[in-house]
Image (cartoon, rainbow, N blue to C red):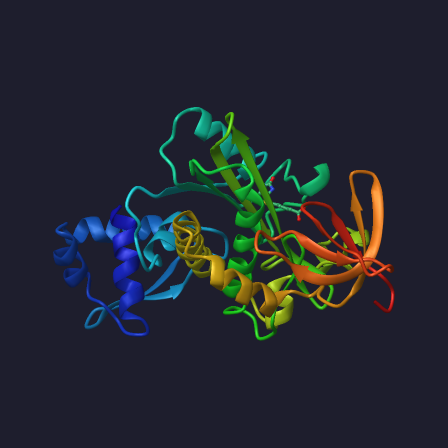
Length: 327
Ligand code: BTN
């Protein structure tokens, strides 16, 4: 798209200028067509400084997600990957499922500025206002055994920690299985869903909600103490479009590594780096039962290792963990 190419030229020149003529000849279009595209971009929240002798310079970018701006910032363009940015959708996970069912070629991703029925784990609501937060889902057709999905989700969790740590000055943590947390407050959550044939995953949707730019006053009262946004931690607005471009790069690379089985050593190392539960006394709620114990870490596939009061260690594939007071 010409729009993306123009943005790429302007971004590459930053903080310098680039002439309209140079953009036009590089893109093989007329100067008038460049000018028209820039007028369209202005209407979408971009600002351009123009000086007759120097050309153009980007002076303002939209705060909300913008497809062209995300695309222009992709470092590596992977063949076959496509994505869409929607203004509003019920749930990006549901949109991915619909598009998969309609036969769209995977991998692809769906981003939305707002969700009307954002979903969390255990059927919970994921608050999804149009407030500068990220609502994203990636769709894959992996053809792997269903048991591998748990490891995939945990591997993606540490991948997101790696990403987030580039955008804020404090280290993120991961709370098993996949909450992204800062000092006990949640900044992001992951909802992975799959359709399974007899012995293989047919398609897989990796959903990520990340509190990026929502002001603390935006949270419903009961969430306020438990949630945090990246901008609060950084003390300034986060560039959502840059973050999204970086997310696409990381998720696609992590997926490839996982499929090729190259993630194994990295997974153990990264999990230990970000794990906030190791050594803590916790209660695990799982299938209507509650179990107490001390977290020893996770095993190779990402199951939680819990040692009970009798010194017995057990591993758990699923559940919700609450840290005991003082634990
Ligand atoms: C959780 O921690 O409970 C998981 C939250 C996952 C939320 C994301 S937002 C994008 C995607 N679409 C959804 O409906 N849910 C996930």
